Length: 240
Image (cartoon, rainbow, N blue to C red; front, side, top):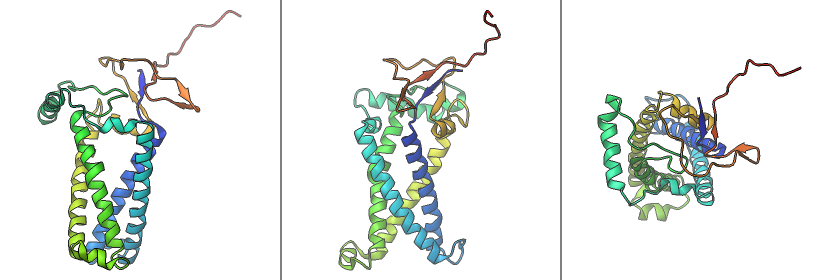
């Protein structure tokens, strides 16, 4: 079966570091808020780990932003106005009932359009609204003793803590939706496998992406858009 290279090594590392950091932040956040009923690491260890993970998430987010800007992959997350509502409606109808009837995906992805319209809007909100708000509120909570005047002007720890917690629950809801939709590929593990190894299998009824083929390799690594034909084994022998 042919396969196409969708996700670069950097994209995969960025994705999984982000995922692990967010999951551990949720875990340690629960311990910080409910130390009496949920205490695997202990309050002090959970707090220290939570702070370290927060700074790691900030660094990973900034590096990811720079990568997406300089490689122009950031364009993947920007919805195209032309035909947006029509495509978004088709995608919503597919998620609501088409997927349960075995209908084909209304918008096939390709290396230049990895996300459908609803995904683009969702990631635009998550990466440009929720994530910055969570990082800023967490940084302000961490720095409350360092910048007490600023903390008071923003409503105090009670207000910042409430905002931080509400955004964390929003991330939890997004994560559940994200994991579920990741299982809606050709097989339940197809999209997850692609994010692990970079390659996604092309099925017989799929059209190969249009346009010029990408270079096979650059700096020893496969390029996004590269297509590999199925491996075949020859049983014939050459002349001796």
